[in-house]
Length: 258
Image (cartoon, rainbow, N blue to C red; front, side):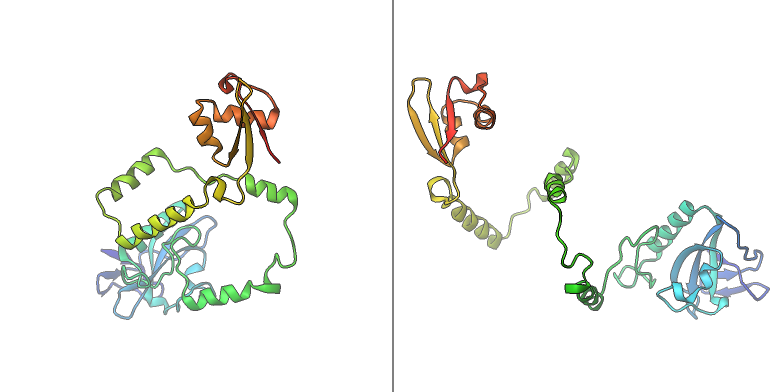
């Protein structure tokens, strides 16, 4: 049972599953955090928050209507900020949110630091989009420097751990793909195959020279040719860049036919 401390009236009251007890008084201290709840008239909570000082009374800092003082309760007091965040998240998780149909609270986030779990309405998304278009965009009329572009190119996507890959694989194992998806994949594969090698207008032309001096003109399919001749693909690419030969090249030479 959650106990609430009445902020004004004395005595013990009972309301739904909550009881009121004025055994504690509100104190404003630095680094003195607490969690609190706003109650409906029937005594059920509709909002959970975390704060310190007069945070629970400040109407302009909430996205819900602040109820009268007799429907504002402390859940836990004398917490540090980390403990308050943790308890706020816990209470929201237990009671659930109305916007995502998991419970009775009108909170728009999962609690804790930041806006984790917040879901914008379609209207809000449209407003944000309009507010950042054209001249309203802070980057409007500007351009990234060459250095910045180079840095952005060099960024690597986060790696998925082997354990995560295994979980993802096991989760999908045995689940047949929808026929429409399979058909799309097959169609894409046919299109991709039609642009391989000579059929690809962007293919580079490479001239390979064997140890016996015989030349082979290869349009695209660099890796395939190296595999067929049992020579190092990396070594041949390195030769194009540096002109140096490595043992894996097996005395083969290559150049681009630009």
